[in-house]
Amino acid sequence: MLYIYLPVAHTSINILLPIGLGLLVGVMSGLFGVGGGFLMTPLLMMAGIPPTVAAATDSNQIVGASSSGSYAHWRLGNIDFRMGAYLLAGSFVGGLLGVQLIKFLREMGNADFVIKITYILMLGIVGTYMFIESLAAIRKGKKGEAEAEVKPEEKKESRMTRIVQSLPLQTDFDKSGVRQSAIVPIILGAFIGVLAAVMGVGGGFLMVPVMVYLLKMPMRVVVGTSLFLILFTCIEVTFLQAYTNHTVDFILAVLLLAGSTIGAQTGTMVGKKLKGDQLKILLAIIVLAVTVKIIIDVTSTPEILLSAAGGE
Amino acid sequence: MMRKLIKISLALLPLLLLLALAPVVSAKTTAKANHEEIDIGISYNGSTVSVSGVTEKDVDLLIKVYSRDSSEQMKVKTQVGGFLWMNGQSVEFKDVPNVYLLRGTATVDELLDRSEQEAYDIGYAALAANGSLEPEVDPDQKTQLFEEFFRYKEEGSLYARSTGGIDLETDGQQQKYDTVFDWPYQAPPDDYMITVYAVRDGRVIETADAKLVVEEVGVERALTDLAMERGGLYGIAAILVAVSAGFGVGVIFKTGGGAH
Image 1 (cartoon, each protein chain N blue to C red):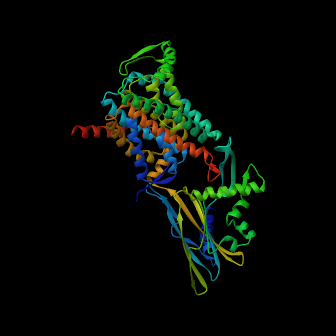
Image 2: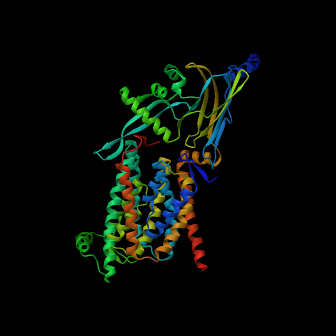
Image 3: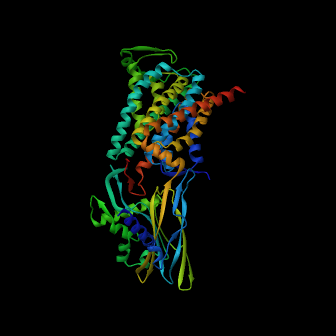
């Protein structure tokens, strides 16, 4: 009774599974401003969905979750549209390149391997960095120095800041309270766009630390702006995946959406009650847990030494 | 002239019909599936296929449900740098069915000589012997790769072997048989064949065939066609639904929040 047949994935699934997954990832989306693709895509693969369909359908789902989350954050005044527009311009070009790249990798037959390695590197670096940084910030906070910055960080970032300040097109981003060259968000956006397409994720877990650490935006505005960007990136990726690779499973996406749109709203509400550093460390822990899981997968001996060749 | 041709055709029609039914009616062994068609609808989660019929008394049976031979492109997983597993060399398994379910009153080796197994494509050893690999490999490697292939297929529920589970009932000089296969939801839409082999003294003495058509219907069919043939339109529809769902839920929550 509860089973539904997925026409593109060519498999049957218990309805409660994608709805539950959607809910879980939706909460994370509203809470941290991530699309949750880095979690959803591997979970869908575990549920028997072919990797390429899992990644493409997840993009479709993120469109829904991030519309829901963006709307909630927009009402709270948490979106920096100007910064968003520059990041978006970059990620649009990056997305186009990424879809072509994954098509090429699939023909080579190494798509899954590249996706996994990209995951490990990106998640590992981002997770570790965020964890260390937010842990340090929380400890400082406990000592009653909530405003104090972490010293080594300041040193490390000052060189970066000098380079960034020398770039042309310096712009004021009022909502975020920062002054930056417009070139910085455009380049960072392009980088995230490529990864988003390759990994089938919205790039939120990359976008969030980029905005926090490189663009120096306050966490509150980061979450809203990130969701707003993910929405556009994933609209583009969904269309290109459906048009080029025919891998979007509409029924699966609708089931995921049923959970994730509600989850995104819930996450936004919970997020209002948590501090920035608490949010960061929570996200870091989840990111690191996923990294460990993927590393175990890639390094343990497979039970069957054959896998279906990618492509249509 | 035209009228004459039509007359001849009409006269031949009963004969043609008789010929079409020949495997079922002329042989002593008969086979019938409970339904000749499985529809994949929205709530499809696999099905069952019951095969029944009559055979000569005191024969063993082997029943095969399978798709026609095709080829399958696979990747062999190899270890890189001593710790990372990744997809390596590409191998094409040729002349093997995508779906192969086999059930017997005893195991294939107990019932059939090796030459008979291969002649009728019954059992994994026969599939490996009749199938081929591209690029070609040495016989040991071929055996090894086919073993992995069968495990891969069994894992995906597309291949299965079982012994027993066939109800037999002697009725005079005849023997009635009846068995039910679990039909895996992983088996894609296709035309499938069912063949029943009556076996005695290591040889196939008679066969009977039936057909099974699995196809998508209704919404499933429409969505698959749309996704494959009109990807752009499908993509736009998928995006619009997602955006409306997102904003829709957002508005509902806003209304709900306002009520407090």
